[in-house]
Amino acid sequence: MPFLPYYDHIDPGQGGSSMVIPELPRPVLNRQHVFTCPVCHQSFASYEDRFQHRFEAHPYQRPLLVLGAHEVTTPRFVVTTALSPEQIKAVNAETCRLDGKTITAKTLARRLAEAKSGFFKVELAGTQGKITVSYEISIEVASDAHAFLVEQEFARLYSPGVVSVASVSAFIRAASEARTARRYVDGLAAYLYGILAKDQRGDTTLSQEQGRARLNEAGQTLSEIGRPLAAAVAGIVSFQSNAFSRNERLAAVPRLQSAMSWFESVRTSGQQLIVGREDGPITPNACVPLDSATDEILAWMEMPHDRLRGHTKQIAKRGQQDDWLPEDRIKAKVLLAAIHETEGDAGQAGKVARDFRHDPVFSRLAERLISSEKESSA
Image (tube, rainbow, N blue to C red; front, side, top):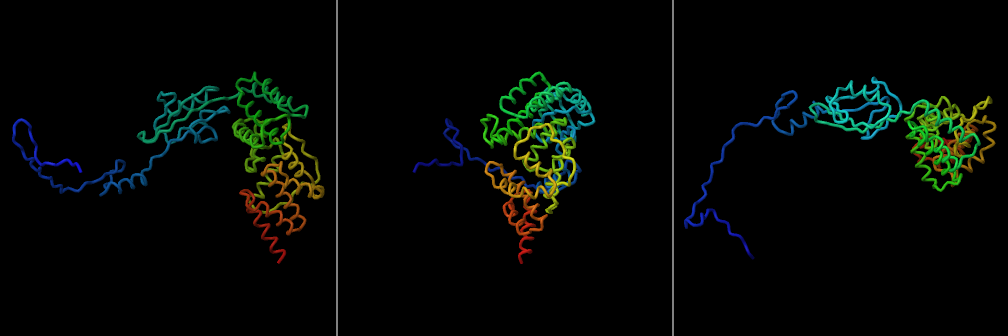
């Protein structure tokens, strides 16, 4: 096996002699190393002790950009509502940069508030520049005139009462002049395409799952726009996905707000409420097209209890219907269980509840109804 011999001398070559490498004396360190905190100057015997102290006693605070009611937590953010300088805050920021130029936090707030459109790069640096965050802010604030034009064309679309792929395309073309409200148009168009796909009607080629994606896109886009129509459509999308707590801006559509509040109360308390309103004037439908499942569920919830009881078989059928999405089937089952419990039939209510006992929204209610069923049969 080949090897490389090791010699403890150096051969200078032409001299023909060799020189032994002397061993250097090793220094003896008698002093103890001290690790000092750079913030409070407290001393520690080890690096590990100082490290733990530094980040427990003096943690670096991450800078944060606040735009209105939103704490910006993503690298890219779109502003669709006009903000005042007081609504724009750079939190925990020692240094602010706008498009590469260092400015004060007050100047940053003023410049972003003054802009009605544009793309801006914001950088915030924390104490001693230890933590830096960057944002790409796109400002797309629609003018009132353009927003009104979009809403006018949307109402004209719905006036015949029939929505199709062709009519949605016509709406997009008619609203193309609203240049500052393109995001508004995109959100409403995504909603319309979504409900067509959900119902598989109007000459759509999208699947139900593709329609669900369009609806989610619409809800996210429109929730950022401060217009009553945008709030109504975003609320409908929340109702479709069983996110019932998002009902703050729905005063303009009381039938939807009432239904959202009922389901949210049932979800949070785990207790059934009497479903079905008392006799009285029916709230007119908002001028927003609905998918058939949402329209039917809202219609049930507006009925007085005596009439609703007559729809028990229909509600039970919808709860098992394959062409209804799971979220809508769950709402039908919760309504059915509420009717049975209101009638004092704990056995039937518990039987229905078994179908949604693993649902993340209504599992608490299901467990209570199943327990009541067991107690009543004991």
